[in-house]
Each structure stands twice: as C-alpha cells, then as structure tokens.
Image (cartoon, rainbow, N blue to C red; front, top):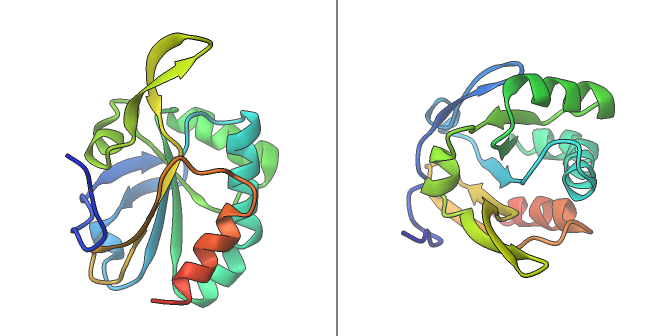
Length: 153
C-alpha cells in the first residue's frame, strides 16, 4: 500500500536509544519522520547531522524530528554519541514501520537485487495526517527543504 498526502500516518511505537518513541504520543504537534538505511554510513550520517544542525529551528516551530532505521538501539546510541546527534533515533529491526510507510523496497546495487530502506521523509501534521512526502531523498539540502515545508503548515 502506498501512502499519499492527506492519508493518516501509520501509528507506531518503537524503541529509541533514549526511550520509547510513539507517533500517537506526539499528536497535536507536527512530526518529521525520516527513514534511512543504516547508522554511521556516509549519506545517513550527513542526513542525521543536517537535521541535528537545524533541530533548534524545528523545535521553535514545535516539530519533533525522528530518524527511523532497522539498526538496533545500541547502534543508534553509538551513532548519536559519535556524531553528537540531537534528533530522536527509532529502531525498526522487524521493518514493520518501514513496510507501513512503504520504504522497505527492492533495491539494486551493481546488478544485485536486495531488500532495503529507501531514503524517504514524511511530514506529519498536528492532526496525524501526512502533509508532505519526499521519496528517494538526495541528502544535500534535504533537511533545509523539510524545514521550509514545516513553515507552510
């Protein structure tokens, strides 16, 4: 099932390296949920740092930023500590949330097909509906584009 703007965001509760993260518990405020393939890899690190650098601007607008990957809580903790990350990091080892958001997809690398996380971001409005979707995200400038979209809510 593919999600579209205006659809209710799939609810989730996941373990994070700083405690449980629940989308329902954040209802009443906008939330950025960004999906990334793996902790401490080049693109994923750049993306997490970019969101962290803009975190004060997101927080001024009442927005919570959550990064979701299949990595475990311990890996998230090491990733956070190594790069001084401020965003919430949620662990989805069973890929249940990734599948609900449609980002657990078949990918191809050097002609080899495999399943993995498509880098994507969802902006969820205060009522829990999807306000914007970015698919196949290119990291450069992405966090800034999401921040600008928050301003349009």
